[in-house]
Amino acid sequence: MRISILPKTSLGKWSIGLVAAIIITFILVPILVHQIGIDFEPKSLKLIMVAAVLTILSIGSIVTGSIGVRGKRGFIYFLPLVLGFFALLISIGMMLDTGA
Image (cartoon, rainbow, N blue to C red; front, side, top):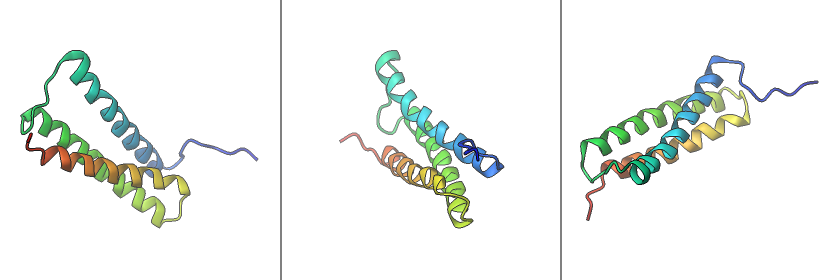
């Protein structure tokens, strides 16, 4: 019996894709700040755009994770659910940052 790690359903593929996009965003933003020098000042358009992208990705991740957990498709759907909630909290904090 072979155990497959990769998802076979479209829900699983979306879930993994959204988690990967969230992780890439978390890796890319510090690189942009420290290496390239893009400044994400509080209430700047750049920061709001990154926060909006992160919000959209996290809501999608929460939805796919909730459907997967509720449909009893597997334990692996807790990862997008938890990471989505974490990313949503981070993005809300980015949007509410006043710089004080």
